[in-house]
Amino acid sequence: MERELTAYRMLKRYACTWAELSCIIGNLFIELSPPCERCGEDALTITGTTVTGNKGTLFVTAAGFDFEGCAEDAVTIDRIRKGRCINAEAGTRKKGTFGI
Image (tube, rainbow, N blue to C red; front, side, top):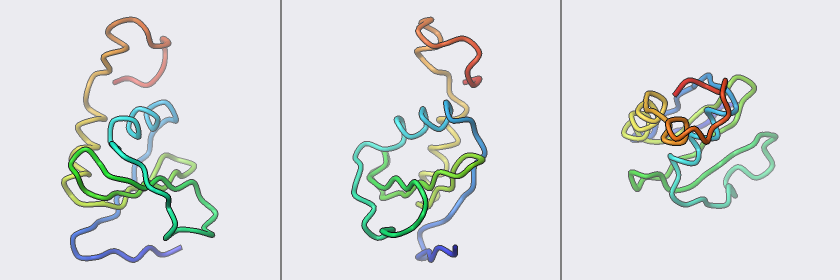
């Protein structure tokens, strides 16, 4: 399936665990929107407004996810992935989950 991008949007592919993906979704999006533009596609699609105020779309894949959005949001995703989980430090996360 080919996705059409406008000039300011990009598509980036990420490999990650389900636990890491859950953390990324929760920290990337501040508001979710119905994915009406993707209606009929056979994929789990999450669309909404990101913490940078831009629109973004996340497509869950078998290996992780594809993200369609601006370059600023791709940088935000990289920062989330490199960050440390405050719940892991507080001891409230299950041991042995992904290493952030």
